[in-house]
Amino acid sequence: MGDVEKLYEDYKDHADFLTIYVREAHPTDEWQMKSNGKDKDDVCYAQPKTLEQRVAIANDFTKRFKYSVPFGIDEMNNAANDAYAAWPERLYILDENGRVSYKGGNGPFKYNPKEVRAWLTERYGEVEHPEANSASDKKS
Amino acid sequence: MKRTLKWMGIAAAVILVAAYTVLSMMAGGPRDALLMVRYALPHMHRGVLKVGDAAPDARLVALDGETRFHLREHLSGRPLVLVFGSFT
Image (tube, rainbow over all chains, first blue to last red):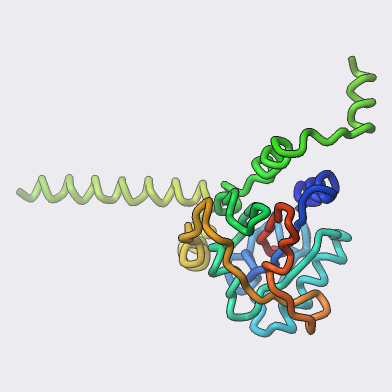
């Protein structure tokens, strides 16, 4: 989600952002990834069975990454997930009139924040990064 | 006849092994291939939403676990980027 946070920081003056936490992709009781293990990233959770469990994991996530993007949690009926065919991860951009303007591909392979950045850049222009620019100036 | 059957069997086995190998490479390992078929594929959908469609609404829960709000409440006359995902 690091890329998304950067997008949010760059474009929050122009666009609104909303993260929607949906059912887990790689819980311990389903397809757990080795990289999620205790000795690595240490994100070991069983698939939430109750809303309380889902809320608890969402809070762990936002605390661990000091995640600042506005946040909502899908209800246990997975209404948002089903309406947007979201799982395991997917990006959308809705336009000013509430219509789908961009529909990203299914994660993880087709999940691409760069496409969202391109959309925002086309409309609002490139966001200047003073630090990044000065670093590249030094190189050249 | 017997020979044909034998070769057909061998060909089928080769195709199966090749398919499973490709799946394993995509998923990250032989065990992951099984788990992907069991847990991931049933939940992955292309969905029916298309560019230009009105964005569906859904009721969401805030991080406090109590407050409810609707996705479309976040439409404020500006574009809205939706980021769907989970922790793991």
